[in-house]
Amino acid sequence: MTTPPFPGQIKDTILQVLAEVAPEADLAGLKPDVSFRDQLDLDSMDFLNFVIRIHEAFGVDIPESDYPKYATLKGCVEQLSGTR
Amino acid sequence: MAEFVMPTLGSDMTKGTLVAWKKQVGDRVAKSEVIAEVDTEKSAIEVESFHAGVIEQLLVKPGETVSVGTVMAIIREEGTQPTSAHASGAHPPLQTVSPKAPDTSLHPASLPTAAPIAGGERLRISPAARKLAGELGVDPVLVKGTGPGGAITLEDIQLSAAPRVTPATSIASPGETSDRQARMRQTIAAAMARSKREIPHYYLSTIIDMGRAMTWLKEENLKRPVTDRLLYGVLLVRAVALALRRVPELNALWKDNAIIQKPDIHVGVAVSLRQGGLIAPAIHDTDKRSLSDLMSNLQDVVKRARAGTLRSSELSDPTITVTNLGEQGVETVFGVIYPPQVALVGFGKVVERPWVVEGQVVSRPVVTATLSADHRVTDGHRGGLFLATIDRLLQEPSQL
Image (cartoon, rainbow over all chains, first blue to last red; front, side, top):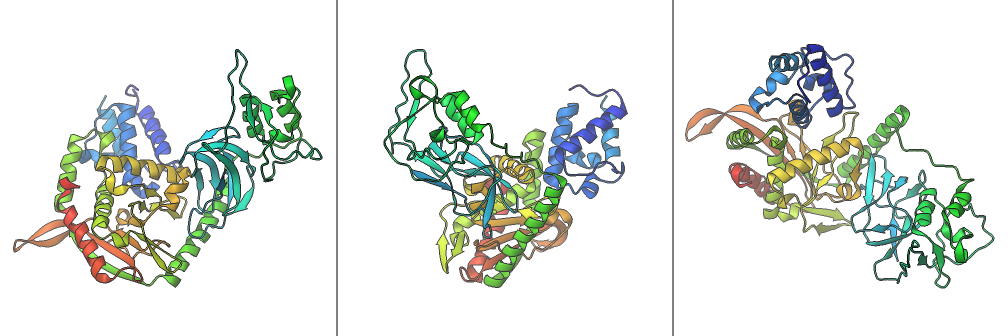
């Protein structure tokens, strides 16, 4: 998959990945600046699966030290927009 | 002949509902191969066969609820009865099997019954027709064949199945989901009440310096692509499994007022389900797996626990349970043993604490490990040795 060109598409892809990782989670009211873990009850296994899928969808390398930057929807969009 | 029965998939399971057969009459089944999907109070489970052979009869229909121990299928074990499937020329081979005692009074659409099998006459049916019969729940013995030599054809099976109502599919509606949650709550309630009623728990706790383990893990994960990274919980599971080799009496079950020592170490890992409830499937032979192997197994088992596709052996085999409640900030776990197991190991959150190293107070990441153990089986001394062994193992993470 190539890098999506617009932030809107980036956001859609992130939400799609979240829905795959946590199918039971309610994504409708997701706040962009609150961490996924706090909002969606993700554990470290879920978050690792999220990072793996983001890596696969966007082709970006995400070292462990960068995990905090991907903790929120806003952070993810910022990181992934910057990789274009 | 071997019987495939509704297994016990938890200490308080009394019945289960067949969701679907994964094998049909005439299919070959290997030992440990999934033969059926069964719905229990806790989850949908893929049930494995204890026997290798050929499915002779399926006695329970999808949608039926039966008690634990009910015979659900008959498996003809390898070598117990000769089969004579002759390949002859261009025609598909006809398999021959022993039919049940003929009972012509039964309507063709009658359900298969558990009548004993009698030798004698042989049934002529093609493998395709036999497979279809299995899928449609038709007992071929009760079908009159119209093919060459009285052989049962696909059409004969279809005609026999015509009046039958197809069982509903297993897709859960929202109502069923909340129903399952309620049933899971009841199952947990029963198991935990039994545990607190019957098991004389003793509790031990120790604080483990995780500095070396966390540093090692960080460096190790730097070398690994994101798809192969390890979670810290895997180190804990591995350390518990190896420590059980040193204190094997904690790797046991208590049944009928006796200790049953288990030679194999199958650590059950507590997985919380987002809709509520928890389930603790086994990672088989935990002590024999590398960290990478454990990690992929853990990912797989957590995923399947949440999707409702665990296997029967994963639910019935745990010899101890590990629960890691640190994710939500809990520092200390006071665990309740899952009967008939005799121990549960709990881990809290890794927290930075002042710690004395060589006379100096330094900041170190530490975790509180607790052991809840059955006093009928072990004493605090052995339990203490077990926790100390976990501590020692975690001080040499590269050896895990």
